[in-house]
Image (cartoon, rainbow, N blue to C red; front, side):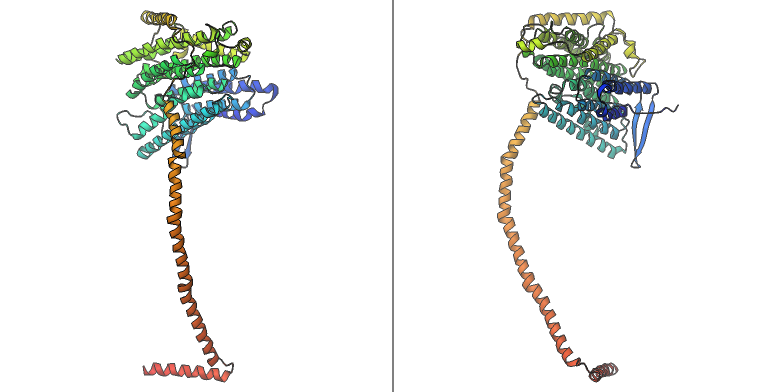
Length: 596
C-alpha cells in the first residue's frame, strides 16, 4: 500500500523557522501545535511500517530518510512525546531562539531514528550536536559558554570519528546502509563507528561531557538534553552493534561509575547527569547482551528513562527557577514551599529506583533478567547491586537534601521559593502519570517493543520480594549514613581533569617552547636562509643584466650597424643602381650554381 510520507523532523524544522513570526496570542498555541502534529505523524507512520523517502544522491548513493520498523517505532514515539512534554514545560520561555534550538535538536534525533544510511545519519547527527550546543549557551550562568564550547568540541570530535568510520566502511564494502554490523568480522571502521556512537551515549572514557553540559544548560534546555542525545545513541547502538560483548563490560562499568560519582555530587543537575551515565549503562549492557529480551529491555528502559529522568530534570529546573540555586549546600527544607515539586521529584526518584508499580520496576528488571537468562551472572548481579545506589541517590539523597533536613539557604532565597508556573507543573503531571502507567499497565509499553513475542512478567513473587528487600536495606543504610553523604561543597575529579589539564598543557606548550622554537626558526631563516637567498638573487640579477643582456643587446647592435652600412652602399635611391646590383647578384648566384 502506498502512503504519503512526510518526515516528522521536517515538521519540527518548519515549525522552528516559522516560530519567530508567531506573535501575541498565536504563540503558545503554535508552540503546542507543532510537536503535537509531529507526534500524530509519528503515530501515523507506526501504523505503516516500510521504507520511505528514498533519494538518489549524485547518481551513485541511495539515501533513505524514512525507515519505519519495530525499532524506530518505539524510539520515534517516545521522542515525539517528549517533544510535547518539553515544549509545554518551556511555554513560559519568551526567547524563541531557545524553542527553535530545542526543535532543531528534536528534529535531529528523529532524523537519526528514521534514517537508513550513514550519510543521512551523519547529517542529522551533527544537527543534534550543533542545536543542543545552543541550549547550553542560552543559559546566562557563569561557565555556560565554556561548557558549551567543550560540548561542541567533544561532539565534533565524535562526529569526525563516525565520519571516518563509515567512509572507511564504504571504501571497503561500497555500502552506506545503516545496518547491524558483524562482531565476527570487525575491522578498523567497525570500532571507529562504535566509538563515534558511544561518545553520544557517554560511555567511559567518553562520558565527561554529560554532567558538565547538562548542569550548565538552560532550565528548559536541560530537560530536552537529558532525553534525546544519549537515548538516540542507544538506538544507533541497538541498530548497529546488538550482541557485541564489549558493550556488556562497558555498560556495567558505566552503571557503577556513574552512581559512585552521583553519590559524591553537590550540584543537583550534575548528580542527575551522573545518574544518567549509570542508567544508560543498563541500556548499553542490554544492547551488548543482544537477545530479544535484552533488546526489548534496552528499548523499554530508554523509553522509561526519558520520562522519569525528564521528570527529575523538570523538578530540578523548578527548584533552580524558584531559588536561583543549584547546589545542595544552598538549599534544604523546601518541602513546605514547593510541595508539588517535591511530589513529582519523589515520583521520578522512585521510578528510577524500580519501585513496584512504577516504570523502572518493569524496564530495568527486563535487562537484568536477560543477563541471568544469558548466564551473565556477574554482570546481572552487579546491575542489581547498582539499584541500591540508584535508590540511595535519586530516591533518598536527592529529595532529602533539597526538601528536608536543615535549611542551608539564606532567608531571601527561602522566602521566594514556590512551586513553578502552571505549564511546568502540567509537564511534570504528564511525565509522572506516564511513569505510573508504564509500571502498572505493562501492555502500554510492551506492545511497542521490537520483539512482541517475548514474554516477561515482572510482577512475580521472587522479583517483588527481592526488590522490596533491596529498597528496605537501602533505606536503612541511608538512615544511618545520611550525615556521611550529606551536602558538601566538594569537587569530584573525573577523567575530564585530563581533558582540562591537557588543554592547559597544550596552551602552555604553544605559548612557551613551541613559540620559542618558532621564533628561533624565524631568526635562523632570516639570517641564513633569507640572506643567502637575497645574495644569490642579486648575483643572478647582475649576471642577467651584464652578461645575458650584454650578449643579446650587443648582437642586436652589431646586426643593426651592418644593416645600416649595407643600406648606405646598396640603397642609394636610384633605380639604375638598384637594378644593377640586383642583376649582378643574381648572375653571381646563377654562375655559381652552374659551375658548382
